[in-house]
Length: 320
Ligand code: G3H
Ligand code: 13P
Ligand code: ZN
Image (cartoon, rainbow, N blue to C red; front, side, top):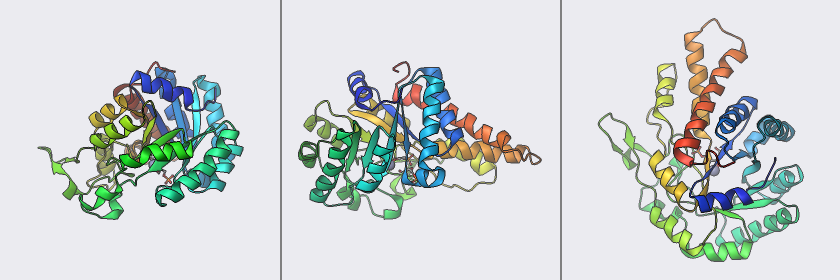
């Protein structure tokens, strides 16, 4: 059934695991994710960004997710990722989503509270849950040194007031993750013997402090792709160019999932999976021109990476 994240998060919090929130943009992405979850009996959050709604159209996404629910019988929440304003959130609440994120992280604390609260009131009146964000994820485009982006981390002193004032159902925090396939600059990292970049550790001290201030409250991690180096290698060996792509190490995500983090957002890893599959297919079969042949290889890779995440990182297999 189509569900909210309420029950999922309660069980995940108590069971020390996390739910994967995977971004969906087309049919093969939905199929790859949900086929993996079905095999492993895992609860799922499928999320759509404003960009996804622009690319695929709202109705197509809603119906694809409904088809996946019919096909798998799994509890699936349909979530708006990074809602920029009340109108976008409202359109998803009215249009069948069960969860929305209002991302007011770039506003002042006070404005973030006011705007989040407005969304929460409308959402709750319609049986929909809300995720909000405090602190700002470091982005590679920020081009700031480690000390300077200290200011972007979530301030644990703010979380109680924020949650109490807004009535929000979950909270995304900034502890050192970032969006995209280039999460850390080479100068922020060390290199291992194979020359692979090793990123700086996440700020578990902040996560612990937030969890202490918000007992039994679900925390969300954005920018949590691990940027699998096997996919990066396949891409680079088949005509791609993604030097120094780097993500969050899986052991750190596993640790976060065992703590208060109940939702882990993954988009970039799906993009890499799809791209690696398609690039290799084109290289191996220069004569192919049937999209079903090459897109299927992307879908197969998505299923494989989602299976891996569910079993080895999130720990939500068998929890549906
Ligand atoms: O957080 C951003 C997600 O990866 C969605 O990206 O806005 O390009 O769809 P997008
Ligand atoms: P990644 O870019 O790490 O996959 O993060 C996705 C995300 O946070 C979507 O909201
Ligand atoms: Zn995000």
